[in-house]
Amino acid sequence: MKAVCAIVEGDGEVAAMPVVLRRLHQRFGPVDHVNVLAPIRVHKDRFLNRQEEFRRHLLLAAAKSGDEGWILIVLDADDACPMALAADIRKRAREVLPFREVAVVIPNREFEAWFIAAAESLDGVRGFAWDAKDRIDAETPRNAKGWMKERMVSRSYGETTDQPAFSARFDLDQAAKNSRSFRKMCSEWKKNFQLAEAT
Image 1 (cartoon, rainbow, N blue to C red):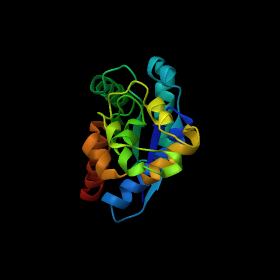
Image 2 (cartoon, rainbow, N blue to C red; image 1 turned 120 degrees about the vertical axis):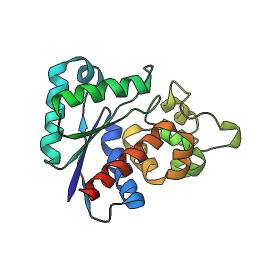
Image 3 (cartoon, one colour; image 1 turned 60 degrees about the horizontal axis):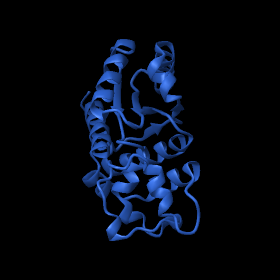
Image 4 (cartoon, helix red, strand yellow; image 1 turned 90 degrees about the horizontal axis):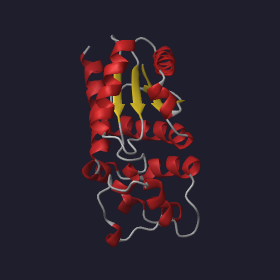
């Protein structure tokens, strides 16, 4: 049984990422059980800018997931270029863990971009209201959390409660169609487990 350990930056993602990963497992396989471990939460700035912090958390993820495990780093792009940031993190991760599978997915600009990409499928969920006039490029809003908050008609948006709930309900196909970073998430999942099944 292969284990997956994610490194994320927010309390909401700590709860939401396992939901997303279990749904990807259900959708794409493998047939065998996958152990989705509790994510490791990091402070993004310290993780990226302090080498010892970066190394410590990667080694912890490697220890938790085991020798055959998969490490997944998911951090918001914010104002950075997602491709450049991902490439830099991958390069640094290879220096720390040269023989381990480490995937990097950078939502542009925030994790909530995946919900915006599939917003139509979330209409009516937990007080979220979507209208066709709200259709936008999912990875455009600088404040994706704010975009979600503005469309919560009966209550406020809470990361730790709503991220896991929306993660359980958003349409994976819509998200993949409308979000480059979510397509990357899906391709990394499939690539990793295709490799695992081939070995």
